[in-house]
Length: 331
Image (cartoon, rainbow, N blue to C red; front, side, top):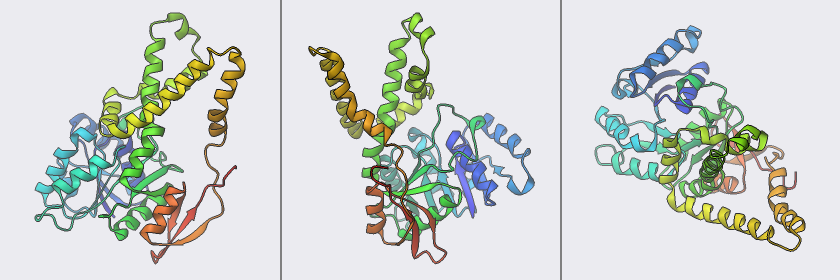
């Protein structure tokens, strides 16, 4: 495919590298001239057949593209969409943003107009972030084995969804069907609130030099994503406020229960009982896959698979079935 990647940070840069290594013709663009220069230099260091090109404008990147991938922060999205409209692009668009509802709304508002009647869009989100950022941190193997959400909202054509699912599973990702609403609810719990917790933990320890000296594995792992740029956390949470508030309230309630347990007559027993639910949940994660199944390509079937925690690893050549896995309960 001819693919344009707009935004060359960790995710966009890694996807650019992975697609080029898989043999696709890939053009990239970033608003920062220094990032574009770094990406051009990096391209010269890979085999010719796996090289990508860096363009000076979004119009140049999208000119001959079958697919445009939006890999920019949420606050920059509207400007990029306006540039695509101005370029006359009418092909398939996906994104890698960590919140889906606002992206979908922006695409409908700017691209699904009388002037752009055939623009296809499928929202996406690879669960493959790191605390490091920028093109220098890009890794073409970043998506191997990762869960990559592809949204099947009412407006998303199944044919477009299958095109992206086939592309991403060939990169080694596990594609998870979902809707924008279900995705945003789920990532509030497993991504957005953990960023807030990590930042709170790091800030609480920052005032105690002894604590920082003694910090080891639990502090390192619990505060790891606090190293991500604050703009990233702000963009995630501000674009998903309702779901984040709900998830944060649940976590706060559980922490309040922990505080109450330590006030009990027998705090050892009370805290142990409080810890049991979380311990059981964590030791059961990640879910183990069951046997592969061949599922028919129907939107309702795919969405039920995602709701059950399942994923797909391949799209059949005739695009009538997908290879699907469901997690094994209690594994």
